[in-house]
Length: 174
Image 1 (cartoon, helix red, strand yellow):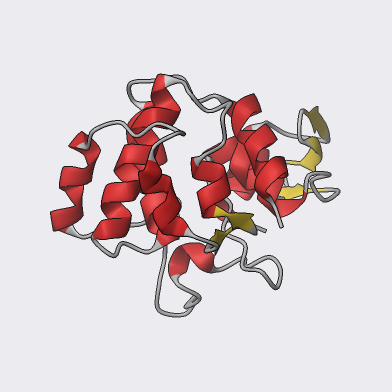
Image 2 (cartoon, rainbow, N blue to C red):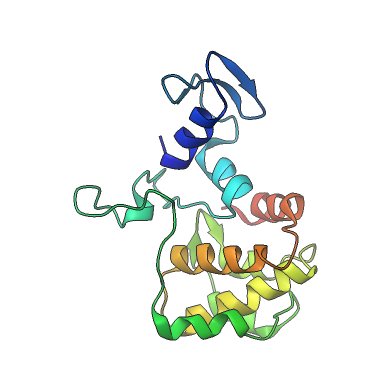
């Protein structure tokens, strides 16, 4: 179970608690049942990222599959210093040809080109994130780290379109 999920459960209080994500026992820091949307849906809705390889959930993705030598207790991955300029990248729109560069590459079981071109994502948050992700891709930042960084940066100035993201996620999942 991911650290953020345990912290959320533990922060809810003492005793069995029903929450939007199901029932949780805060004294044990555990949810009693799995998220009905699975890890991908939960991570996408809560944090804007879903670190799932094509062969199933990867509970150690945030620490580069090295739980012995790596710690990411707050769920924050770092990016190279030269990629920080991507936070100031120009917005990118769904009809932009730059989305084609992703081809059939996948992230969290989603075709990146499809997600980039998803027509319902025309809001300022999505346009900003597209530009930021395109810049980070050009700099070779790993896709998971890039999504985490760009989503967090966009959240500071814009409202995340959670329903539209979920719709595109379902549309582009293959």
